[in-house]
Amino acid sequence: MPAVSEPRGPVLPHTWRPLGVRLAVLFFGGLLAVVCVAAWFAVGADVRAKVTLYQQVTLVLIAVAAAAVAWSLVRCRVTATVQGLEVVNGYRTHHYEWAEVLAVHMPPGAPFPTFDLADGTSRFALGIQATDGDRARVAIAELRLLLARTSEDSLQRPDPPAD
Image (cartoon, rainbow, N blue to C red; front, side, top):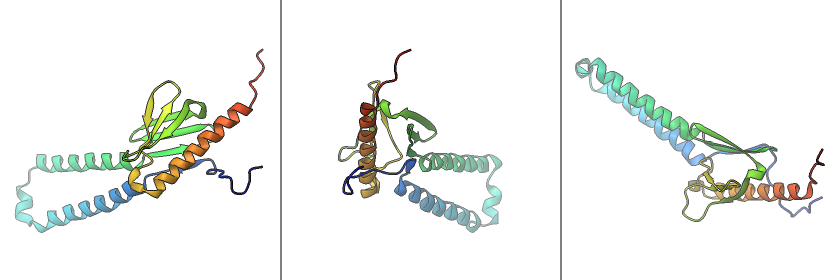
């Protein structure tokens, strides 16, 4: 049994999400939508009548593209489960078993952490953002603790007998 002062890490499953990005998308995206709608009605009916269908469709497509980018930023996350890590970056999801993840790095000035993988590659994790400050530092510490705990468990677990 670990000592009371020994860090145990988060209870699994645990998800980390960027707070600052989500708040910025909600606040500034909502503010931009309100300003655009207010400006549309403020210009008057005579100006609105001069806007062609193609111009209206273009504006709607720009709004849809902005919403798609905002949604991809909001859905970024890192989830630790008993089986491993799930990293969602934008619209791509990556699943890694604990044995595949060797280390997590986030040097000073880096915008988000990097996972070193067993196949020699690296993967960014946009679900933890340096702009979140202490939340990001705690998340990295928790991930490192989980990585250390799972590597110790794999060292202590005997290999199954070969049949």
